[in-house]
Length: 512
Image (cartoon, rainbow, N blue to C red; front, side):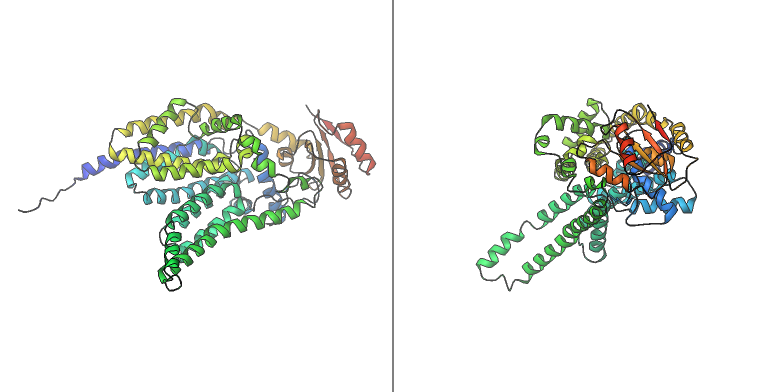
């Protein structure tokens, strides 16, 4: 009997690929629209303080060149108070100089580029989990249309840079046969991710650790068995497995952790020299970063964090019930459980940061979205019916973007930027603004393109700190004093202290 060879017509192939190609094309179109909306707008809106703090060093490096101990000139001299390793800031500065675009546009461009580069290892991870080409197209469309990553992925922050390095690190460190270039590349990506933003790399570190334990779960029983038989020293296979595990632990866990610790130590060394920034060292911010045990065990804390999770897709409870159904129906439960663990690990460690900041889910949300994408691709492969559910989910996310993020992107901050730039236009570029009542948000110094000594609203800020910071300005020309009341320190107290240390401002402006 002659076997019958099944042939596939071009028309049937086209029909088979039409839906995933259509999904991906539509998602890419929407991504371009959402990303470029308000592209030339100045920084403003949610967490503008964090965006300004990130981009302000770029403004300084454009003038003075790339620097490792970069200036964040908002808390007086010495101006070098580095936080994250400046890979993002270097890239933004270079793009600004080479492309000739504004510093804000350069910041957005670098953020978008790193997000798009993150899609490559995500696609490779999907392929590793057995998702075929059509399924991966649909999964990537799910990432592109995501409103949270559209909005925060175009912000002037280093979140995309840290995320890209973290996802590449996880993919490389967990691929089979991590010898040669891939093992070294994983260590480099992990180290860079930890340098740029250690809070972002933690979920990936957890994932890598789990994978190493899972892969070597039989090693310890085998060692014990060989030791009992007196063969442990002669068992070459066990020795090879032990050496390989040690090498991987060093490359994939120890090196990234040491890199992050070394940079934190160096950055703290600069901050400690500033009388106000000394309150921003890693030790001083321990409770702020990690939260307290009382906070970690509080139901109210996790209610807020759970609510912030909704921003990843939609605040509609029915949408999330559908997502949960997708995850439950998937046949890749073990993989989904791992990514879910990686997702929750970040707020478990950095509880207060996730409680206080909306954008922090950029660091860990990708792992939950990857789990959902795997579930979606798996269901679509099993039955075409699920394409309709995917379409509904995509439309829900677009509607969510339209109601929330689009409005924020369209809000204009041009008038405010022009106002502050004009306010100090008649002062020298290297003059300093003394500011009270604005905490330490860098938005006005960024707009005005002037250095600043801002008196923060911190309870632990001491009189000696403020006085020493003011004395540090004696060799600088003052652009003026900007006051917003009420403030903890007090306007009259500030002016009296300035007079006592020999600073006599000619311009004092009170703003509402």
